[in-house]
Image 1: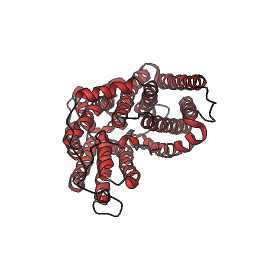
Image 2: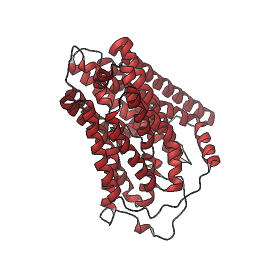
Image 3: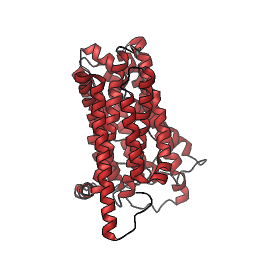
Image 4: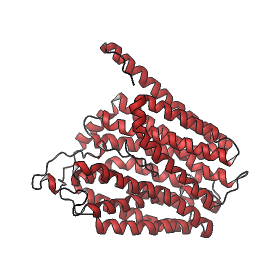
Length: 436
């Protein structure tokens, strides 16, 4: 299983295989980057910095939503669009930008994506209205869509296969640190100097990381440009969407992220209100709970080996539901314990679903992964907005109700998959396996 990303990035090893299979014959396999070899450390550090920049920017306003609401006189639902617009635009642009990277190059796409995103990041603090802030965040999210798929393809092409797992791990670590530290940093700076200064600090952090990336990323040596073929891309995407198992996995990823997006978009509003009344810096530090996700994602592989894929999903669903219900209590310890369970369940379920996509797709794995990312971030966008609306109308109980409905959706899909698998085995006359 891949490690989890606190920026909620969706990356698997198989998905890193580029859709272009053209062989590069001018360079031998031993010339690819490998630990200890020339260029490997520069490449690792460059992509680590890119991951920090991308996910610090993507979720930069999430920990600041109560302050944004107060500044513009906006409801939680209105302010939540500063997060949902970014993740929604990313979801819509992942597939087309991953296709463009096949034509113009991974390094070029990553550089352009970061450049546009950091420029917007410097403009965001000066947004004169909530509408402008949402519009700028949407452009920023669309720009960032060019980074994840291009980075995975770059690694698959430039790094020796035996070193690929470690290289991907460093990139994911950058995603994790960027997603978590950006929220925490923004929370404490906002408490001292306001949310606009906090967003400015995140923008400057991203600029620094983008410059480091540009100066250190090695030139691509194994990339072979491919012509854009909309018909072939459409055929591949249509094929994936016609696969019942892939459709279920996409839906599971979207529903899990709906829960997660709703909870972490709204939790700040709950904690700054009575009976907790926590300061902004402490609220931002709540995102340290994300570290639990790294552990649960790593453990997901062992869970699948012991319980099977669907068994692991049942456990993830149960853990998430238990956390939602526990968070209803008005004691801070209970709320924190609930967040731990929700986070652990979400990351475990996400790890199982995202890795299953790569294993299920026998061709066009880059596109299969991009479709999962689209569904995943659309779930984040929907969860953030609907969770905030539910909080506005029914308080935290309303947000929890939305989360429970999404969890029940995952449970229903998993039950359907279990029944479909059993029916298929009976038709084939095969004995039931130990694990589903």
